[in-house]
Image 1: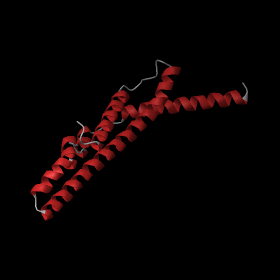
Image 2: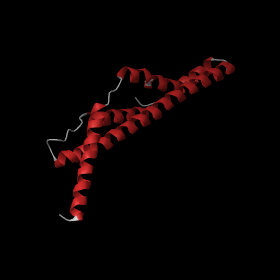
Image 3: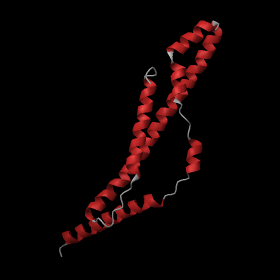
Amino acid sequence: MSVIAWVIVLVSVLALALIMWMARGSRGASVDIEALRSQLLPLDVDAFRNLVDPRERQYLHDRLPPSDFRKVHRERMLAATEYAWCAAITLQENAFRLRLQAIQTIPRLYLSIIVPAWGSVPLGLADKCDRLTRQAVILGSMQAPSRG
């Protein structure tokens, strides 16, 4: 065999070993669900809508003295800001995780094309895409609070 053929075989074996290592590495990772749940901040879209509702603002403006209204309004807007940051950060983090999982899945899909018996395709990717889409819809509904 020529040197070029040996180089091609060597590169192919190394690529296959890398693909198998990536596929095995994602299966072996353990996730502490309780630790992740403790980091979650609930996002109550109805509460956010109430905070930014112009009718609610007007109601408070009409019934509170100006100094009390400014104080309450400032607190409500700070709370609404926290909701918006929480929603955006959660969406970004989940999109990043989804991208990482997709990057790990692609070599496994190619491996499945080459050797169907070796390729184990993760089933959770579609569910994560669906969850991310729902989170984006929730964030979009926060931008139009008058819509239900």
